[in-house]
Length: 203
Image 1: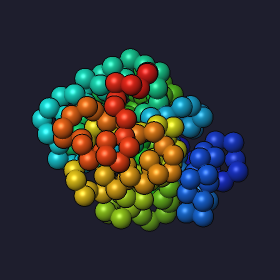
Image 2: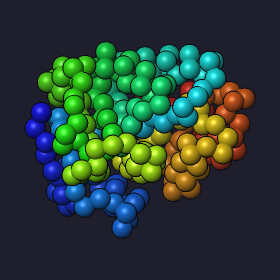
Image 3: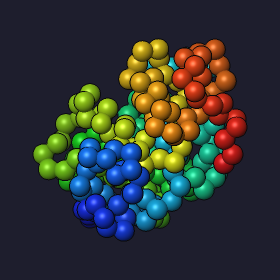
């Protein structure tokens, strides 16, 4: 697939990156797929690695409903729950932006991505370029904040107490982003930070 480089100030470069990340915003982003997706409204999805079973089932149902909408979904899709969300979304028609925590120049593109790329509804987007071929915890954290900056709104099905996902939620609520989660006792920590109930989100 063709790799494109988009520099700060160019038409497809998300202005939200400079707004929210300021000096930490990358000067160049790397993409493969349809860069026009970057000009649509986006919803980011993040979750802790381990989730309660009830939350997993609610998330799958929510993503299935989201799949029938025209909302662009963005994320790293790295945790097991996030990966299954991506699998569900790929069977729909809405745009998807995948942000790997590595450079994409030498990344092997999965066969499952070919059809949505050909349909113009799938974009692989990275803030890393060059020889960042391995995923690390630090790069994953940086990637999540990158995706959160681009997103108009954020859904966090579950964030374990004192986890990096909880910290992500806290930081972006403080920055003015709307963060949604499910109405569950498991998510008391997120509601305490200011998250809103997912059902209030209108697709």
